[in-house]
Image (cartoon, rainbow, N blue to C red; front, side, top):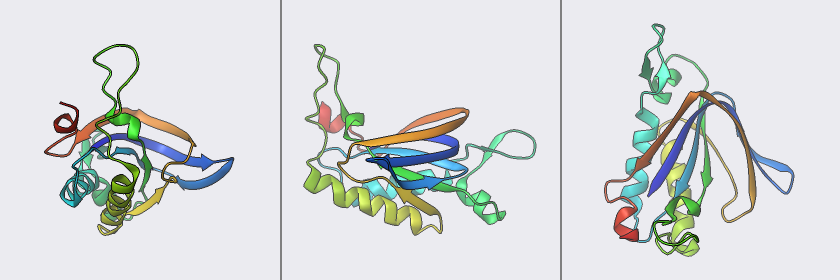
Length: 159
């Protein structure tokens, strides 16, 4: 499982012109599910995302997590957007190969489980629509963008 995590001032996702999810301050998470991923991968990434220290403390150091902000009474959340293209293998030729991405029937329950695990930490979590053509709008803060893989990682699925 792979996640691209962006620290944002705001973010929203729309489908056919209708906003389906939006957050103010927080993390925009693009999530790709690889073949062979399981609940343990979703749990790992959800825990990592809830606790990754990429928000600034009063001294300006990236030393606070979403859960730290919540503990200080600061409203922040997660916008989770499914994105199978994160599993693209473009090492050969010019057309990316998506064979490492999980089939939708396998990926959607894990995407939903990831969202449940984020919410299970007491964090607000909005989401896009699985398999829909989405438009994502956001203001990256920093900019801060981090790539996270679950321990097995998508490399196991792509070779």
